[in-house]
Image 1 (cartoon, rainbow, N blue to C red):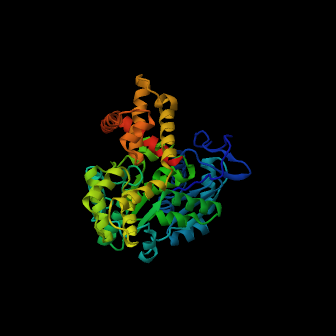
Image 2: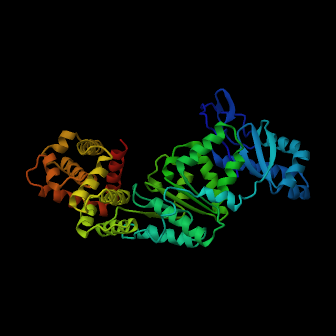
Image 3: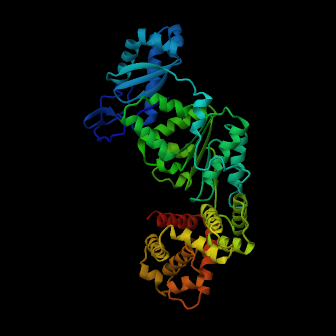
Length: 475
């Protein structure tokens, strides 16, 4: 499988001598102060290799071609040199006898000289070399048994369980998306644990997309043998990538992941991806990758409803060996609405307070909630960020949102701001009403209920609100 890199940025000067014998326009550009070239169109590179093989077939006997060239695979092309792979025995003979023929054929097809080398394919890593690739925080704690299923996540849970039961044959790839803290990483780890329970010899790789990218950059910058990197990822039985949205717009990483994806799918290896948004909303993602991400099953996870939040708190309390009265469970569940990680964090803080000799009471619960919200911005700062972001999104001013203007173009953003403040802060309806200069908090209750209902039925609004909340958290 091809690997071609262009890490160091290139000019837009066309390299017009390329592909003269193939009748293609140039797909390369020279790199300043560097002889390497970046491939802009992968389809033409694949076509290049097909043309080289066709030329070899035309100029060799059928026997020589089938014995020595048929199994060759294009592994690496950087514009100056070509690396091919085959089994060790054929590599030795090809390097001794056929390199001049290969280089002449490449030159004839491409219109310029390249150096050719043939390397042995690496064997699939052994079990004791691969188990270390599956590791993430709390990986052993995350199973299907302790994943709380509700209406907001039951589809993603069912799809994950199906994949874990029959990897590579059910939904491939499985793409799970949803906001941070809703259980995507839990499902990835549950899939890993379930597969290893059924098949301890499975070669599973769990990786965050940023770690994948950084590892690739390390190989390229330090001129390491990239076949080791390819062997690690392209021989996996199961590849799970968390937060895949971070590769969008990273050309070299997208290119490498494209080849990795195709290799694994062709080998019927399972791929599971998570993201904070669906593929169609990754604006800078290469179209072919988007198509591949959408070629399997897409499952979303929504914020849990009240009943599910209560179940999550009770389950976490039980696992920590503490009892929380139902009234306090309900109090926490009503305050933290959109992040499971924060729910579980509140329970952990409750346990810490109990171990310090404090009672299980409303004061302890309030302290746990207060600590969670104070980990981010102070509430007044957070409110300002929310209103600023809503104003920016809808093209109005902060003063317009806080005003009492009744024009629809101001009323709707105002309602959205009220709703998001209620979702992202511990403030009561009365406190939110005061922010907007209202004497009656019923207006806030009405706005919050209306936007919540509209959000469920309007995908565009749902996306806008999610983006506003992400931007507020990111800034």
